[in-house]
Length: 136
Image (tube, rainbow, N blue to C red; front, side, top):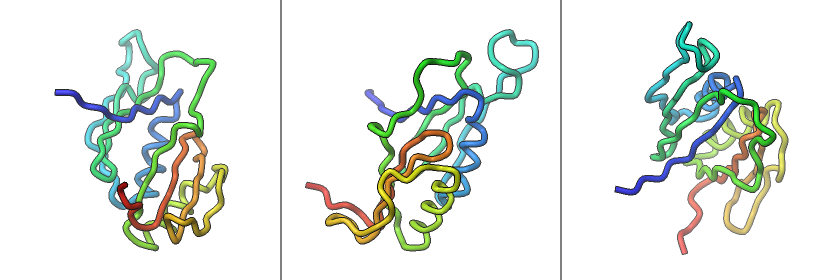
Protein backbone atom coordinates (compact mmCIF):
# COMPACT_ATOMS: atom_id res chain seq x y z
CA UNK A 1 0.00 0.00 0.00
CA UNK A 2 1.34 3.42 -0.97
CA UNK A 3 1.67 5.87 1.90
CA UNK A 4 2.87 9.47 1.78
CA UNK A 5 3.91 11.43 4.87
CA UNK A 6 5.56 14.83 5.23
CA UNK A 7 9.14 14.51 6.52
CA UNK A 8 10.89 17.35 8.33
CA UNK A 9 14.68 17.30 8.61
CA UNK A 10 16.29 19.43 11.30
CA UNK A 11 19.93 19.83 12.33
CA UNK A 12 19.75 19.62 16.10
CA UNK A 13 16.47 21.49 16.62
CA UNK A 14 13.90 18.69 16.10
CA UNK A 15 12.97 18.41 19.77
CA UNK A 16 12.56 22.18 20.13
CA UNK A 17 10.42 22.22 16.97
CA UNK A 18 8.23 19.41 18.34
CA UNK A 19 7.72 21.42 21.54
CA UNK A 20 6.79 24.50 19.50
CA UNK A 21 4.23 22.56 17.46
CA UNK A 22 2.75 21.01 20.61
CA UNK A 23 2.33 24.55 21.98
CA UNK A 24 0.89 25.90 18.71
CA UNK A 25 -1.73 23.18 18.16
CA UNK A 26 -3.91 21.69 20.89
CA UNK A 27 -4.56 18.76 18.54
CA UNK A 28 -0.83 17.91 18.21
CA UNK A 29 0.01 14.35 19.32
CA UNK A 30 3.55 13.00 19.63
CA UNK A 31 3.24 9.32 18.77
CA UNK A 32 6.86 8.16 18.91
CA UNK A 33 10.23 9.62 19.83
CA UNK A 34 13.56 7.83 19.53
CA UNK A 35 16.83 9.47 20.47
CA UNK A 36 20.35 8.68 19.37
CA UNK A 37 21.85 6.59 22.19
CA UNK A 38 25.17 7.18 23.91
CA UNK A 39 28.10 5.42 22.25
CA UNK A 40 26.18 4.30 19.17
CA UNK A 41 28.61 5.95 16.79
CA UNK A 42 26.14 7.64 14.46
CA UNK A 43 24.24 10.68 15.60
CA UNK A 44 24.57 13.08 18.48
CA UNK A 45 23.51 11.30 21.69
CA UNK A 46 20.14 12.58 22.87
CA UNK A 47 19.17 14.21 19.59
CA UNK A 48 16.07 13.01 17.74
CA UNK A 49 16.74 9.89 15.73
CA UNK A 50 13.12 9.68 14.62
CA UNK A 51 9.85 11.21 15.75
CA UNK A 52 6.33 10.66 14.51
CA UNK A 53 3.59 13.14 15.28
CA UNK A 54 -0.05 13.50 14.33
CA UNK A 55 -1.62 16.79 13.32
CA UNK A 56 -5.00 17.13 11.67
CA UNK A 57 -5.18 13.45 10.75
CA UNK A 58 -1.77 13.48 9.02
CA UNK A 59 1.24 11.61 10.36
CA UNK A 60 4.52 13.53 10.10
CA UNK A 61 8.05 12.20 10.44
CA UNK A 62 11.00 14.24 11.62
CA UNK A 63 14.57 13.82 12.78
CA UNK A 64 17.87 15.56 13.36
CA UNK A 65 20.16 15.02 10.39
CA UNK A 66 23.55 13.48 11.02
CA UNK A 67 24.98 15.93 8.47
CA UNK A 68 24.68 19.66 7.93
CA UNK A 69 23.56 20.27 4.36
CA UNK A 70 23.73 23.22 1.98
CA UNK A 71 19.93 23.44 2.06
CA UNK A 72 17.16 23.90 4.57
CA UNK A 73 13.40 24.41 4.47
CA UNK A 74 11.92 26.60 1.75
CA UNK A 75 8.58 28.45 1.72
CA UNK A 76 7.78 26.94 -1.67
CA UNK A 77 6.80 23.80 0.30
CA UNK A 78 4.44 24.64 3.14
CA UNK A 79 2.06 22.93 5.53
CA UNK A 80 -1.51 24.17 5.08
CA UNK A 81 -3.50 24.00 8.32
CA UNK A 82 -7.23 24.59 8.44
CA UNK A 83 -7.93 25.73 12.00
CA UNK A 84 -11.30 24.77 13.46
CA UNK A 85 -11.96 28.04 15.30
CA UNK A 86 -10.71 31.55 15.97
CA UNK A 87 -8.98 30.55 19.22
CA UNK A 88 -7.12 27.72 17.48
CA UNK A 89 -6.09 30.05 14.65
CA UNK A 90 -4.87 32.83 16.95
CA UNK A 91 -2.90 30.38 19.11
CA UNK A 92 -1.13 28.85 16.10
CA UNK A 93 -0.41 32.28 14.59
CA UNK A 94 0.98 33.65 17.87
CA UNK A 95 3.18 30.65 18.68
CA UNK A 96 4.50 29.99 15.17
CA UNK A 97 5.03 33.70 14.54
CA UNK A 98 7.13 34.15 17.70
CA UNK A 99 10.68 34.29 16.35
CA UNK A 100 9.40 33.47 12.87
CA UNK A 101 8.89 35.48 9.71
CA UNK A 102 5.50 36.35 8.22
CA UNK A 103 5.43 35.75 4.47
CA UNK A 104 1.80 36.95 4.29
CA UNK A 105 0.48 38.75 7.38
CA UNK A 106 -2.83 37.64 8.85
CA UNK A 107 -5.76 39.05 6.94
CA UNK A 108 -8.82 38.16 4.93
CA UNK A 109 -8.54 36.25 1.66
CA UNK A 110 -11.24 35.26 -0.81
CA UNK A 111 -11.01 31.67 0.46
CA UNK A 112 -10.72 32.44 4.20
CA UNK A 113 -11.89 35.08 6.67
CA UNK A 114 -8.52 34.75 8.53
CA UNK A 115 -5.39 33.59 6.76
CA UNK A 116 -1.67 33.99 7.29
CA UNK A 117 1.54 32.41 6.00
CA UNK A 118 4.43 32.18 8.44
CA UNK A 119 7.85 30.62 8.38
CA UNK A 120 8.55 29.50 11.96
CA UNK A 121 11.87 30.03 13.76
CA UNK A 122 13.11 26.68 12.40
CA UNK A 123 12.32 27.58 8.78
CA UNK A 124 9.21 25.40 8.38
CA UNK A 125 6.53 27.24 6.40
CA UNK A 126 2.90 27.15 7.64
CA UNK A 127 -0.19 28.47 5.88
CA UNK A 128 -2.89 29.00 8.50
CA UNK A 129 -6.52 29.33 7.53
CA UNK A 130 -9.61 29.81 9.71
CA UNK A 131 -12.12 27.19 8.64
CA UNK A 132 -11.96 24.80 5.75
CA UNK A 133 -11.06 25.74 2.22
CA UNK A 134 -13.68 24.23 -0.09
CA UNK A 135 -12.60 21.30 -2.21
CA UNK A 136 -12.92 21.86 -5.95
